[in-house]
Length: 230
Image 1 (cartoon, one colour):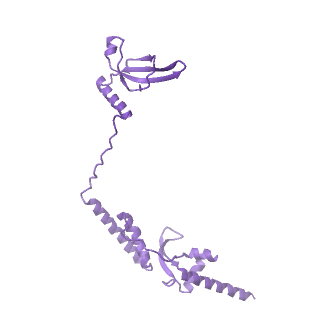
Image 2: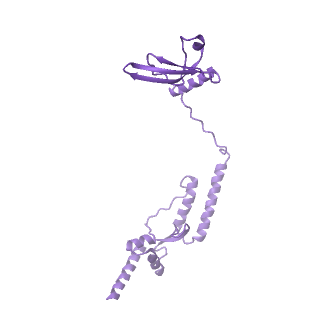
Image 3: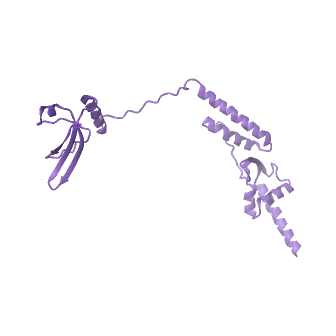
């Protein structure tokens, strides 16, 4: 590959690598050849601003083709050519009805899952069932097809009540069972993750009425213990 170097007496800041250039003052074969700038070293010191060039013969495939390629690249870097945004190609399924069919089929499957869940989780309240269906359907639909139930009253797990009264969740559960408190009067059933596995279980959550009932029962138990010590 023919190449040579040039030292410009006066610097030329616009010169960058891959710029097609023409030279003159050499042999006719050199002056008439196509050349590509490979390196441009700009220097600014006490002697002024200078530029050192390294060029090579543009003989890659065809000289005119290489020059056109390099010129296009340079024009792009200088902002003379803007990058086109690729047009979005339609998916092969668009217009076929397949996406809608698949979404409908997926909704049918999750509804079957919900029905099987309700078949064994027979104690779930209507609001809890609505929450289960909303959690299954809405992500597939991409919008709120089934509204989430609005809980107007705070409900407590047995563990939360146990922390309030400094007793174990198991004790709260025993008190609830002994006093028949797992009814609509005191709260409702929800699906919760089991403490001992990844399975979902029906767990009762207690309302404020239940909270007050636990308070009275626990106070009565404490008073009974104190009287027994007297």
